[in-house]
Image 1 (tube, rainbow, N blue to C red):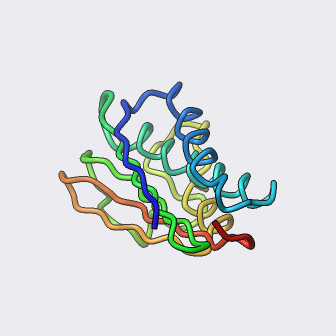
Image 2: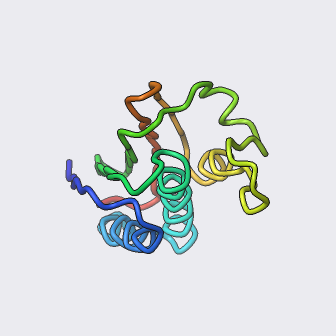
Image 3: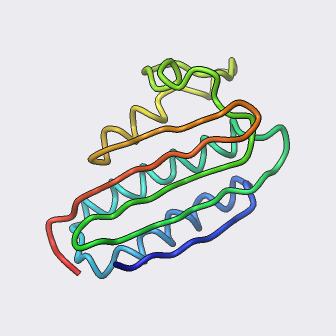
Length: 139
């Protein structure tokens, strides 16, 4: 097994760094272009959710990634507001933000591009999104 952990400030410009870090970590899995793009898209959505929803101002995003055989697990976490209704939050087009820029599709996108997505959240303590993807190649 291989892993890395990082913490990064929840600023919008750091989302691209998170995508790139995960992509670089996956290189040993010999991913197809489609597989790596799927992972980058899902991580981007998870990180963006933290930036937009978790904190009233900038907070810390935790990213833990693990490779075991040909399976990648990525956990994106925060210690922010938490989600009051995790099931509702995962419904397409649902958003706690009322502005026109939010589509409410973040969790749907994650579920589309990853093999599994699990969400744990507690009000006032934060949220953890655990995503897995099995790659066709092996380390």
